[in-house]
Figure 1 (cartoon, rainbow, N blue to C red):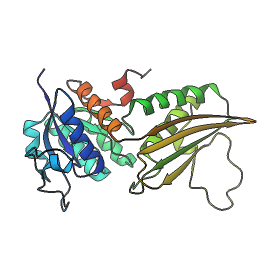
Figure 2: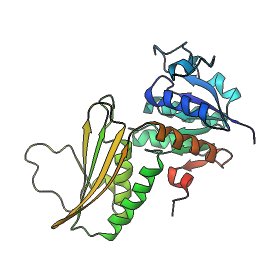
Figure 3: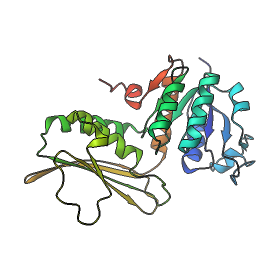
Figure 4: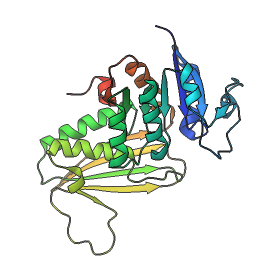
Length: 270
């Protein structure tokens, strides 16, 4: 099979630059284009230089559609408003769409799901192998333990992150809720402040910390009477997310239209 040609959306951001570097290091992949939103100071700049590499003569542009003529897929760690537009474009051009964007609403997810009827889309709140294994373990532990164990999810990220809880924290919350066979939306507690009263039995709590340049740290705490179980994952470099996204792109290439997740990519889905 020929090399897979990928467009990196959000090429000027932390993840975008990391993805460009990872693509150059991955056999079977080539960079087909690099994009940023209108008004970005990165527009017109060489994407290789932005990623700390030698010039690659692929300048950052704002128009994605012309790039789709010579591409097989889009890697997208941007913002929800951009992601839903890219999903619609991917559906029209039948490109693979790999989504690592977090903070998306139900309405956003509905647009992505509709686009997935026409092309293969892989969407995940976290692309790392370790985090997805953590999600599997979280579901199994939640299933094994009764409601007498309270579940708390604690996450910390760098001080530039704009959404909370993180997409990974929500992924872990969904895993815990699946293990308990409950709906996360009606069983979550966030942002406790003041006289909140006693903790509600069966709730899944979230705490979000921000500071420094932390790439991502997550812990799922199962707190029972006189004992506590903690499952944790710490990311020290964004490259782990980039490698996972590229693995997902190669896996998704040639798949039938549909909405896939990292558990599908890793063969961990029940």
